[in-house]
Image 1 (cartoon, rainbow, N blue to C red):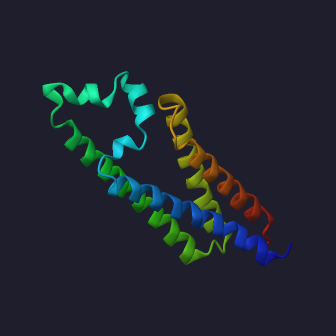
Image 2 (image 1 turned 135 degrees about the horizontal axis):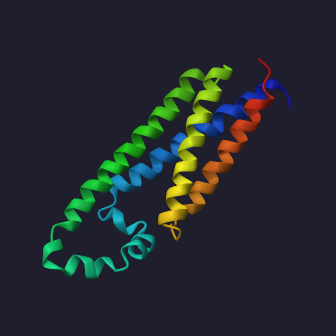
Length: 149
């Protein structure tokens, strides 16, 4: 494969990772009850259903609080995705410094997400998305290693 193909394989998967983060963040922002998106792992972690949790009088405003927390989380994920996409688009990962920097940060983020999911919410429906992100990261890292400076 020529250098142009390796270069495209180095930046396009990283850009898709950012795009995926924006998509996930928007889903948490727009869903009327975002805690339902990952209801089974949340209920497993809480060891009770949301219906039981919300029926207690002391928790009558809990859905409002959860909505704010999930909206904040959604904005945070959208922001990270936009930063990744902007960095990749601006640099096109044309230097080893740009490639190593973004891939290193993405690696740390992925390790942290894997740790959180497998230790705290192992039944998360987002596991598939995590594995796809890891494959995209691997493709980008492998292609980056094939580039000549």
